[in-house]
Image (cartoon, rainbow, N blue to C red; front, side, top):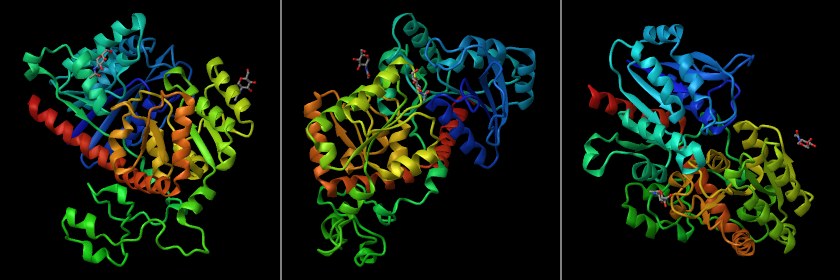
Length: 464
Ligand SMILES: *[C@@H]1O[C@H](CO)[C@@H](O)[C@H](O)[C@H]1NC(C)=O
Ligand SMILES: *[C@@H]1O[C@H](CO)[C@@H](O)[C@H](O)[C@H]1NC(C)=O
């Protein structure tokens, strides 16, 4: 029996970032596991009304006076002092957790505040959704780096969303000397999960059937997609990988068409007019890189030639966001701006299923959940090429043509010419679309929860 105490500042009340979305996803999937109970300790803004989703867990919400940020200005101190109150401590003691999962540095003080109420020592697992000391500046940096280092020291395991975050924590945050490495909490990489609700949506028809066999290590450059049930398929089963890559006789993406009907690549192109960008319109997401690309594509006539409509999804409306929107509209007056908050399902059906290319503009992102959401709908993404820049590229692999890497920091004309070359190659875009969809749909909340459970078991065994 696992009794999990899950501590996170942001959860289902007044969710404002991917952290809250991902925390709910993890809790929802953990409560689906057999023999598992979850108590969530989270914050909510003072005066927030309306019921919160508990996703099968018990939920304790503590009111805080500040809201809307997770950086050094987050209400981590208030959250901790409320968590130390006698009622909360009593409820946590009654729940009698066997393990604590806490999200980010901002939940560590709350964990420390409730811990003394427990009658037995239990292991903690530090769930790092984002390495804040990578982007924090000024006075906040010292605070965040100290609490991130303590979070690692005081946990049996640290879980991150990308290999690059793991390397950063080990090299620049952890205070354990190399000689001391026995004491260091093991750092695990957990991929971000695709929500089951997206997995249950049918893939768009322009992708064709997706139940083809994914052949690991097969050279993607031959452009072959092996469809289950296709003539050569039964014969392929049981063959060694290297044999497969030579003898696969499955149709290529254009192989089944006749001259008179449009090719799958053409169908994909006509059904998908959107050039999409979907990030919070904040500086650290660098949406101006998308706008600069659109400016260039508009100037040289590529938008029109390819029948593309730029779409910008972003609910923020501060002065920075307004500047981005204005600039986009003046570059391409027919762009679509979506200014309300869109849930994953709405994004999938209204935006990503009509997206030919999704541009994820930032040069660092701990994960970038919308890349995987786009992928599940067959919208290929362009992400920054610097190794480890974007966590989702650990899941969607460029070497297997599941995502396209480009240097997004290049001058706009250079980047635009690369994008145009890709747009001109309809077969390549369709290949990436299909492979991205298969990969995204293979990593579900349920798989994510099993992986997390495995880490919990290891941590429990180590500290027993
Ligand atoms: C550690 O920080 C330095 C300076 O910011 C950076 O150049 C380096 O890449 C970081 N190490 C890792 C593994 O990310
Ligand atoms: C964003 O702010 C501008 C300027 O104040 C305003 O005109 C516009 O309606 C706002 N948009 C939304 C979606 O609130």
